[in-house]
Amino acid sequence: MRRISLALVATLVAGLPWAASAITIDDFSTEQSAVVNFGPPTPQTVDSAAAAADAIGGSREISLTRNAPSFGTASVDSSLSDAGLLSFSTGAAVTATATIAYDGSADGALDPSGLGGVSAVSGGEALLRVIARSDLDGTIRVQFHSGSATDYLYAEVTVTGAGAGDGPLQIIDVPLASLLTQGAGADLDSLGAIVALLSGPASVDMQIDSIATIVPEPGSVALLGLGLTGLTMAGRRRA
Image 1 (tube, rainbow, N blue to C red):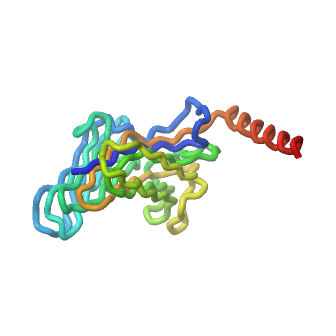
Image 2: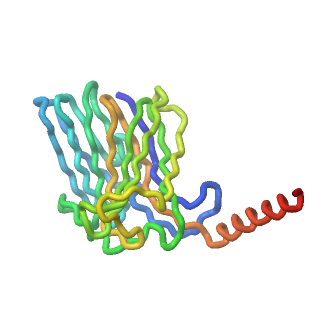
Image 3: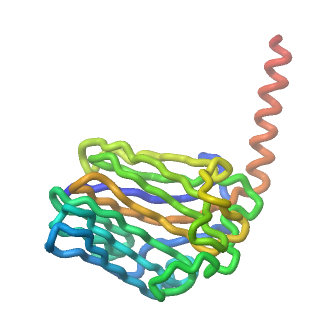
């Protein structure tokens, strides 16, 4: 099996200091698992819902689907294969998709209003940051819902395979202002659910360290503005 390691973190501008306040969506310290065993080459889905104090809303819902015509194993677990990590693995010639949902309940059904209006940005200009490594190309999609299961904002990025599971980490930043829109979209200041979807080619493993949003200190933005102003004035003096 091959391995992709990733950590999803929302930030404003890489390299600037951040405020102490942050929203941790999940740090994957609560144990949970879903496994699809060997079976007929038809689509197979296993669901797992659990209370998780480390997850936003106090719960985590996992749905693992092995695609046809695969008949080998696929698994996804939190803090079992590796402490503090979400691990997603598929066997030889097996493709699958893992969906991790946060909506404030553990009933196995997505409630797009369940988080009750959590802000992902708190008025700040944030980035969705994906830190990942992969031996094969893998896809990570993060959806933000605010009252509808079919309307949302989302980011979809490709982690470029490096040929080895222990290769260098890649940092992929997506401004939340540039998120793609499905249907009517969503309000990032009043979220009801957050969903992460993981997929890849056959024989892919992924690991997620954490998902969070972070708001910068106001002083950081001011310092950035002063720096840009200084550069502009210096350019004028040289001209």
